Image (tube, rainbow, N blue to C red; front, side, top):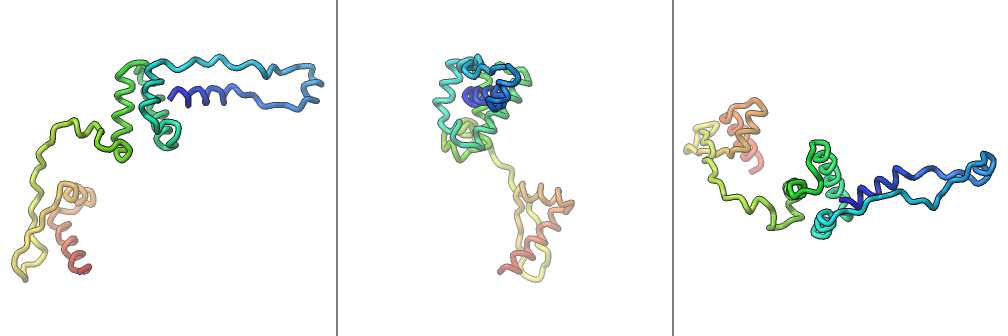
Length: 164
């Protein structure tokens, strides 16, 4: 994370280079040998970067980490605390679970019991009654579409029958 910040700071410090004739005419010489005073990353930052090999290699993940850094710093979280790194790790594992495998923070949480899904009667009664179970997500989607669960179930059955 600090490497990216250092590169950003270096890019901001760079000045456009002028032709030698312009510098001689103006009488001003640019001192190109002076490097900006850039602080070295602290031990925690270095350890975090060593543990997260994707940093600096995966553009999307690195960009998210840098954005999180800016957001945390603006909200007053000190970048040298364990809380700072914990929050970055949590967010990265939520957004990119496929890159963290089974080590994710989700596995640390106890399993929650799922509520039973809604049972809805079928659209027609011409055949033996067939109950349709809607998942929690399907019910939420139906509400978003401003449909009742029954209307959503009818349309779902129509689609199933049309597709075979």
